[in-house]
Image 1 (tube, rainbow, N blue to C red):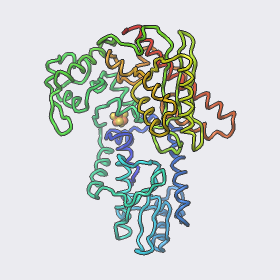
Image 2 (tube, helix red, strand yellow; image 1 turned 60 degrees about the vertical axis):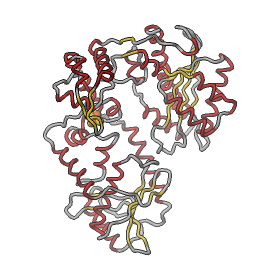
Image 3 (spheres, helix red, strand yellow; image 1 turned 30 degrees about the vertical axis):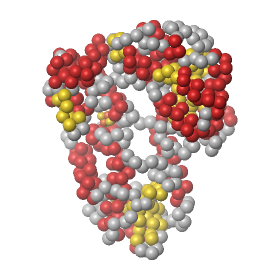
Image 4 (cartoon, rainbow, N blue to C red; image 1 turned 90 degrees about the vertical axis):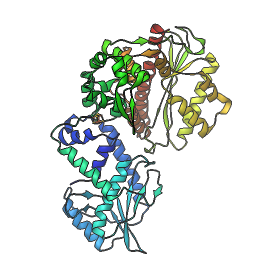
Length: 493
Ligand code: SF4
């Protein structure tokens, strides 16, 4: 039976039709981050539990696990007896094709009508079409059973009620359901351009992106758009070598769909794509210009600070913090390094306390070494510093001084280099410069899971052990950034 969870497969982490086919036909290819999934489920349950406790007495249908028909019968009994609040009732459409388990069915004593209330972990449900379609499907089935369209509501992870929560119209929902059913039943895997930013969070990334990279697919050329890929495919250009064979002039003239318009790739975009492809084919980098190091530094000048933060990319984990690692490493001289990382403490005031500790650490570094370059990778750190200044202020103008000394290594690379990498993110660039990590598991969600474990550690010994792991993880990020910096000094200055 079709249930709301199918919409998630289509829309998250981003819209992809191929994922539906893979889930239905080759689920064994998925690489799942089990610890992260469990953490999300656990957080979801605690949000649900906290809200359910506020709605008064509830009744939950009792039925043997997995026996949806019995669950539906029991739910019907509760509905017919006008049970005020039904928790996790089972709904099945008359034709037996659709099912849904809305979190709450709540009766309005004035109208004697039920409404649907879903509890979501997300604190911001904008841009979550899977939630809209999922609640919409519950509404369609409930309307059939109740004889009227119930009001739909959402309670978000931070306890806000969105009422009514507007859902797509029935015909639009049915179009998507039909599409999903068709995709599942396709005989062959659908053709879908991969893309690093699109695929990197997807559980099929190793399979789809890995295969595309091995085949030197044009999809893996950094900067190429999906519409360009489709247009080039239509012209028989599938891999890096075929772009080179096509030649620049032909490439400029290729027309592609860009939003609602048809555009030519043109010389500006065409040159970028062509040069990027040449680097990929040759496996070597191209220097565009000299790199100007920060603070008037010359190659080999020290000290510098390497700065990298980790923040809760999902704002729905009740961690009460945004930035949970303020990663800092001072490179005093060639071999002398000091890790000054601040791990945000637990508690309601932890977020602010983490910021205060970060500023006081930076103040100490300035007092010891003066104004030295603070090297970071991408604009993320600057954005977060600005957010925290707005949130908690900048006592003593330390954050201002931090900002004045910050230098974006990512920008430096984009301005001066073309690299044979699928993306210019740190993880790809560090591999190119030959940096090797000592920890096997790394990634944004790994550190978030660890930080959550640290907050929930039962005793000081466990929490210190986890803290050490987090610091090692963070030190690797900092060392990776430093490795890229020194590589640039050697090769581009
Ligand atoms: S890896 Fe990319 S192409 Fe493959 S299913 Fe995921 S999003 Fe789609």
